[in-house]
Image 1 (cartoon, one colour):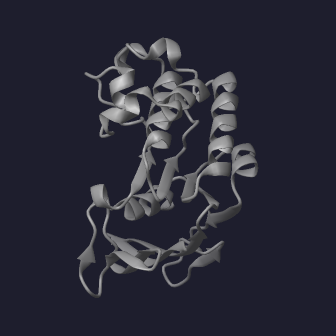
Image 2 (image 1 turned 60 degrees about the vertical axis):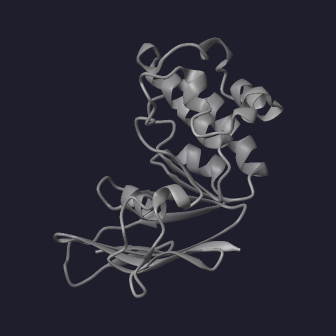
Length: 223
């Protein structure tokens, strides 16, 4: 069972063609220069952008199919996301952010306790995001995504805002989680060390400025 992507995104003069296959239990890292389409690829998988042409399949079922017109809304895709900035609710406590959208039964569970411990959040649970450092906010966002049941986990530069110590802690936590996670992980990162430690496969986006040509590597094409 896998995630299959074969689609094109057209935005003005920018054309992004993606052909990828990621098996369950695998972690795909997408690397490449800024503005090359890495985040747009995540957005299409998450349902924040629709494919202009082509389709995205999860376990053989279409999440997005331009031919049939089928488009599964983001909240129904079984996707957890950690994008740059974290996307936390500023008026909610850390605890409520982590548990947002979860059943009340999650509140007193071993899984929650383990997640809080993994990301060193025990002393922050009653605080609100505006009082946290950038690194702390990112750890909260990661904890929320890891706690949510999902088939796909998307991470866009998850350690960018962290100091060196926090970055190492979060990487270790992510590595431990990825080893037991039964879904598909797609990680966008500029950090070669992070990619080497966490990814089981890598796709590097290459950009060609010649409108008549494109470059391919690792299943991604950007024109």
